[in-house]
Image (cartoon, rainbow, N blue to C red; front, side, top):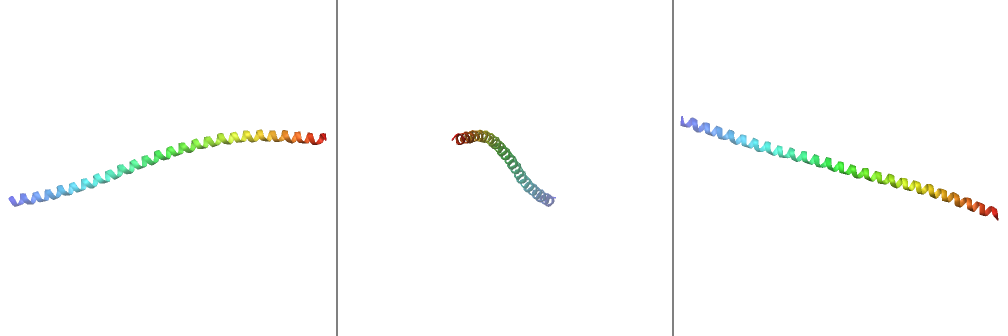
Length: 93
């Protein structure tokens, strides 16, 4: 009977060791999965921030384009006025 109990204890000990190894492996995989999930969240936040920066840059460039367009139209009017003045000056001679 004693030998059977010793054998049973060896089997149970081996089983407990195997379960502990499996628990450690499962915990390790769990930590890897949590790390990967956190990395994905971080990347998503970075992309969102980058998108917001690009949207702000686009808005800024659109405003700059509008200013340049208005300035161009103003300069075209000034050029037309100056050309008209030159033409009148030449015809007066």
